[in-house]
Length: 159
Image (cartoon, rainbow, N blue to C red; front, side, top):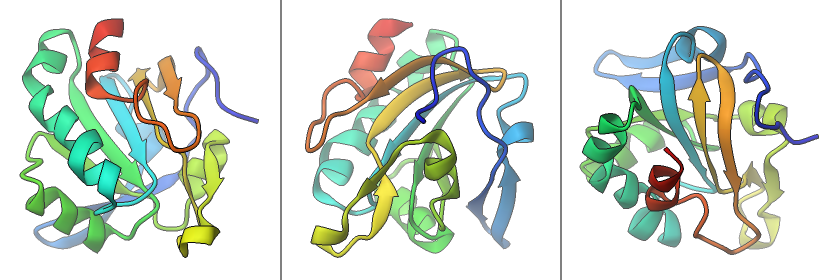
Protein backbone atom coordinates (compact mmCIF):
# COMPACT_ATOMS: atom_id res chain seq x y z
CA UNK A 1 0.00 0.00 0.00
CA UNK A 2 1.33 3.44 -0.95
CA UNK A 3 1.95 6.04 1.74
CA UNK A 4 -0.57 8.88 1.80
CA UNK A 5 -0.66 12.53 2.76
CA UNK A 6 -0.88 12.85 6.54
CA UNK A 7 0.92 9.59 7.27
CA UNK A 8 4.19 9.24 9.15
CA UNK A 9 7.24 8.20 7.14
CA UNK A 10 8.33 4.64 7.88
CA UNK A 11 11.38 4.23 10.08
CA UNK A 12 14.10 2.82 7.82
CA UNK A 13 17.88 3.07 7.57
CA UNK A 14 19.27 5.03 4.63
CA UNK A 15 22.94 5.88 4.05
CA UNK A 16 24.65 9.22 3.51
CA UNK A 17 28.15 9.48 2.05
CA UNK A 18 30.42 11.70 4.13
CA UNK A 19 34.10 12.63 3.96
CA UNK A 20 34.68 9.82 6.48
CA UNK A 21 32.71 7.25 4.47
CA UNK A 22 29.15 5.92 4.58
CA UNK A 23 27.04 7.06 7.53
CA UNK A 24 23.72 5.39 8.51
CA UNK A 25 20.70 7.66 8.67
CA UNK A 26 17.55 6.72 10.58
CA UNK A 27 14.54 8.28 8.84
CA UNK A 28 12.65 8.66 12.13
CA UNK A 29 15.36 10.92 13.53
CA UNK A 30 16.41 12.57 10.28
CA UNK A 31 13.02 14.01 9.30
CA UNK A 32 11.92 14.92 12.83
CA UNK A 33 11.30 18.60 13.52
CA UNK A 34 12.03 19.81 10.01
CA UNK A 35 10.26 20.50 6.73
CA UNK A 36 12.01 18.60 3.95
CA UNK A 37 11.53 18.46 0.19
CA UNK A 38 12.18 14.81 -0.60
CA UNK A 39 12.37 13.42 -4.10
CA UNK A 40 13.22 10.00 -5.44
CA UNK A 41 14.59 8.86 -8.76
CA UNK A 42 14.79 5.40 -10.32
CA UNK A 43 18.57 5.64 -10.69
CA UNK A 44 21.55 7.92 -10.27
CA UNK A 45 23.23 8.89 -13.55
CA UNK A 46 20.19 7.82 -15.60
CA UNK A 47 19.01 10.19 -18.38
CA UNK A 48 15.90 11.93 -16.99
CA UNK A 49 17.23 11.84 -13.43
CA UNK A 50 20.52 13.50 -14.41
CA UNK A 51 19.26 15.89 -17.09
CA UNK A 52 16.06 17.13 -15.45
CA UNK A 53 15.09 15.84 -12.00
CA UNK A 54 18.19 16.50 -9.88
CA UNK A 55 19.19 19.70 -11.75
CA UNK A 56 15.72 21.17 -11.13
CA UNK A 57 16.12 20.81 -7.37
CA UNK A 58 19.67 22.14 -7.49
CA UNK A 59 18.45 25.18 -9.44
CA UNK A 60 15.43 25.81 -7.17
CA UNK A 61 17.29 25.28 -3.88
CA UNK A 62 17.04 28.92 -2.79
CA UNK A 63 13.40 29.30 -3.82
CA UNK A 64 12.36 26.15 -1.96
CA UNK A 65 14.17 27.26 1.17
CA UNK A 66 12.59 30.72 0.91
CA UNK A 67 9.19 28.96 1.03
CA UNK A 68 9.97 27.18 4.30
CA UNK A 69 11.91 24.10 3.22
CA UNK A 70 14.76 23.34 5.63
CA UNK A 71 16.49 20.74 3.48
CA UNK A 72 16.26 19.08 0.07
CA UNK A 73 16.85 15.32 -0.02
CA UNK A 74 17.26 12.99 -2.99
CA UNK A 75 16.96 9.25 -2.58
CA UNK A 76 17.47 6.37 -4.99
CA UNK A 77 17.98 2.63 -4.88
CA UNK A 78 21.73 2.99 -5.34
CA UNK A 79 24.66 2.52 -3.00
CA UNK A 80 26.06 5.49 -1.04
CA UNK A 81 29.23 5.63 -3.16
CA UNK A 82 27.19 6.09 -6.34
CA UNK A 83 24.89 8.66 -4.70
CA UNK A 84 27.90 10.60 -3.39
CA UNK A 85 29.61 10.57 -6.79
CA UNK A 86 26.39 11.61 -8.55
CA UNK A 87 25.89 14.52 -6.15
CA UNK A 88 29.48 15.70 -6.68
CA UNK A 89 29.40 15.37 -10.46
CA UNK A 90 26.07 17.24 -10.56
CA UNK A 91 27.27 20.09 -8.30
CA UNK A 92 24.34 19.26 -6.03
CA UNK A 93 25.80 20.91 -2.92
CA UNK A 94 22.35 22.03 -1.70
CA UNK A 95 20.84 18.54 -2.01
CA UNK A 96 21.46 15.78 0.52
CA UNK A 97 21.92 12.46 -1.25
CA UNK A 98 20.56 9.50 0.73
CA UNK A 99 21.16 6.01 -0.60
CA UNK A 100 18.39 3.43 -0.32
CA UNK A 101 20.79 0.64 -1.28
CA UNK A 102 18.46 -2.28 -0.66
CA UNK A 103 15.27 -0.46 -1.61
CA UNK A 104 13.89 -0.76 1.93
CA UNK A 105 12.63 2.82 2.03
CA UNK A 106 10.97 2.62 -1.40
CA UNK A 107 9.34 -0.66 -0.38
CA UNK A 108 8.17 0.68 3.00
CA UNK A 109 6.60 3.67 1.20
CA UNK A 110 4.87 1.35 -1.30
CA UNK A 111 6.65 3.20 -4.11
CA UNK A 112 8.71 0.56 -5.88
CA UNK A 113 8.83 -0.21 -9.59
CA UNK A 114 10.13 -3.11 -11.61
CA UNK A 115 13.04 -1.93 -13.76
CA UNK A 116 14.21 -5.44 -14.62
CA UNK A 117 13.53 -5.05 -18.34
CA UNK A 118 16.25 -2.36 -18.25
CA UNK A 119 18.57 -4.49 -16.09
CA UNK A 120 17.87 -2.35 -13.02
CA UNK A 121 15.82 -4.72 -10.83
CA UNK A 122 13.49 -3.27 -8.22
CA UNK A 123 13.84 0.50 -7.96
CA UNK A 124 12.01 3.48 -6.53
CA UNK A 125 9.26 5.13 -8.49
CA UNK A 126 9.86 8.76 -9.40
CA UNK A 127 8.13 11.03 -6.87
CA UNK A 128 8.45 14.13 -4.75
CA UNK A 129 7.00 14.96 -1.39
CA UNK A 130 7.12 17.50 1.37
CA UNK A 131 7.78 15.91 4.74
CA UNK A 132 6.89 18.06 7.73
CA UNK A 133 8.13 16.74 11.09
CA UNK A 134 8.18 13.21 9.69
CA UNK A 135 4.68 13.36 8.16
CA UNK A 136 3.82 13.53 4.48
CA UNK A 137 2.41 16.98 3.71
CA UNK A 138 2.44 16.74 -0.11
CA UNK A 139 2.92 13.68 -2.33
CA UNK A 140 3.43 13.66 -6.10
CA UNK A 141 3.93 10.26 -7.74
CA UNK A 142 4.75 10.04 -11.45
CA UNK A 143 3.16 7.60 -13.85
CA UNK A 144 5.51 5.18 -15.63
CA UNK A 145 7.94 7.00 -17.91
CA UNK A 146 6.62 10.45 -16.92
CA UNK A 147 8.32 13.50 -15.45
CA UNK A 148 6.14 16.44 -14.43
CA UNK A 149 4.48 16.28 -11.01
CA UNK A 150 7.67 15.28 -9.18
CA UNK A 151 9.65 18.25 -10.51
CA UNK A 152 11.03 21.03 -8.34
CA UNK A 153 8.82 23.53 -10.17
CA UNK A 154 5.66 21.54 -9.42
CA UNK A 155 6.61 21.11 -5.77
CA UNK A 156 7.47 24.79 -5.48
CA UNK A 157 3.98 25.64 -6.77
CA UNK A 158 2.46 23.60 -3.94
CA UNK A 159 4.22 25.57 -1.19
